[in-house]
Each structure stands twice: as C-alpha cells, then as structure tokens.
Amino acid sequence: MESKLKTLNDWLEWQQKLHPANIDFKIERIKSVYNRLGIERIANKIIIIAGTNGKGSTVSILESLLYHANIKVGSFTSPHIQRYNERIKINKCEISDEEIIEAFKYIDDKRADVSLTYFEFATLAAFYIFDKNDIDYAILEVGLGGRLDATNIIDSDISIITSIGIDHTEFLGNTIDSIALEKAGVMRPLKYSIFADENPPSAILNYAKNNSTSLLIHHNDFESRIYKDHWIWSGKNIKNIKLPLLPLVGDFQYNHASAALMSLELLEPKIFQDTNTIKDSIQNIKLLGRYQIVKSNPEIILDVAHNEDAAK
Image 1 (cartoon, rainbow, N blue to C red):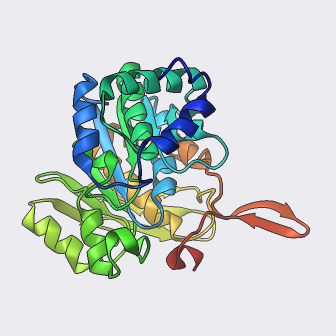
Image 2 (cartoon, rainbow, N blue to C red):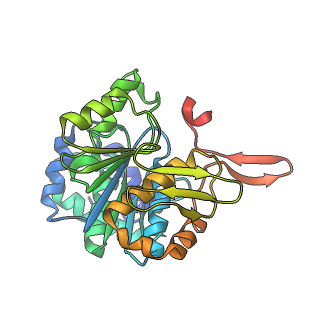
Image 3 (cartoon, rainbow, N blue to C red):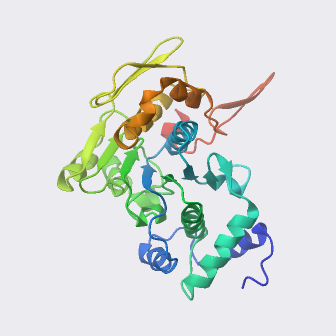
C-alpha cells in the first residue's frame, strides 16, 4: 500500500476509508497490532488523562511543567485544530510529517490483515514515535471514554480524571454513573488516580475501592485557592506554593492545574525544589481554542466546547 501513499494527507485520507467504522471499541484489534510493534514501554513514566472536559488543558499544563524542568516529555492529544501533527509532540514541538509517515509505514507493515481506525493509527504512531525517541514521560489524552479507548491498552503510572458530564451517550450511556464507569476504566490497581473536580460520582468511588486504586480528590486530598493576582496550591506533603495566575480563562482550569501538580508530586517530586521553574512553566502554557480571544472589535472568541458542561 505504501507505494501509493506519498504525503501525510494521502495516508490520512486512506486511513479514513480503511475501517468500516470511525469509532470501534473492539480493543483486541489494536492490542494485537501493538504487540507486533516490538515496543517494550513507550516511556519511563506514563500519565493517562480521561474526562468529559479539560483533558487537553491538563495535557498542556503537564507538558509545560515537565518540559521546563528539563524532563523529556511526549504528548498525544486529539483531535487537532489546525494540523494533524499537533496530536503528537515531543518537548512541546510537533512531530514532522516525515516522522509520522515513517510510523504509519511501520504500523501498516506490521498490522497484516488487521484493519485499524483513523484514531487507532494515530495512537500507535504516537507510541512508536515515543519509543523511538526514548522519552521520560508520555502524557496520553483518552479519545473517548476510557475503558475501551485505544490509549488504554498500556498501563499508566497515574491516571487523571478531569470531570464527568453528559456527552457521547451513544457510546458511553446516558447517565452520569454509566459515563463515569467507562472513564474509571483508566484506573489501575495499586496505583494512584486523581479526580480533578469535586464530588466524584459514586461509580468512580466504587471502582477505585473495588480495584484497590488510591483515589485522590480535589479539595479533599489536595487544594487550590485562587486570589486576584496569584493562586495557592497544596498537595499531600508539599504545602502552600504561591503561583502566577494561569494564562487560561476560567476558574475550572485551576482544577486541571491542581491535578497536574498532584500527579507530579507523586511521580516527580524533585521539580518542586525549584518553584521558579514551576512559575515559568505555568506562564508558558499554550493551548489553542479554549476561550481564545482572536479579535476585540468586534469580539471574536474561539472555543472547542461541544457539550452542555463545556458550554456552561
């Protein structure tokens, strides 16, 4: 097949026709192809992020915190806003067309007769590129749900669940608890999971209890307080760090920043030895399409909100 596919756009158009469904929660297919790629572990440490809203923000915050601490970090997000390459980054830089095409060729060769969705191809390409670049941290954004999402085929060191709302009911169910249960599927036994919002649904609490997952909840196990010109974060052992306001609009973004910091207190506590680096990383968070004001007269705001909670 690869002889006909020259450009990244060629590959992407072909992938959209390869599998009969855009979304297919038969996780065994992508697992079987992943096992053929010869990857032992995509990074030294892996953080997976699920949730109805706030996943992209949390990825960007974590990516900035790690990058500015001189820790090699790869991120996988979806969908993209302007360029497909936004989906796979190393040290905050988009991967080139050539590197993505190389990954696609390798995956296409190894998959044999197994068909993959567009998203599954992207996920495996990210895993291949992360492995090839020998990264310290992989930050993975769940595409849809959690339990049966392509990103969930490998074990993470920590999971973050940002929020639970009604969305994608045709795949996840139409109640908060049914949706929460799907997202809870990213939790791992004997590992930490962080809930960025307050008052997690009972399905999250029960899943954590039944699977021996240590669940940490915002405003219970870690804390954020927002003031006019700064905010204060406290974790389990690290208390009252004074930080600059986020360059992101909305108080809810502090939930995501707090969860990101909590995950790094557990996995990478040494970054807290230099609060100036943390301050720099916060001031350098960049994220397209989240209440992005592109013009003032008339005021034009771009936002990717696509469900009721996000719109609110």
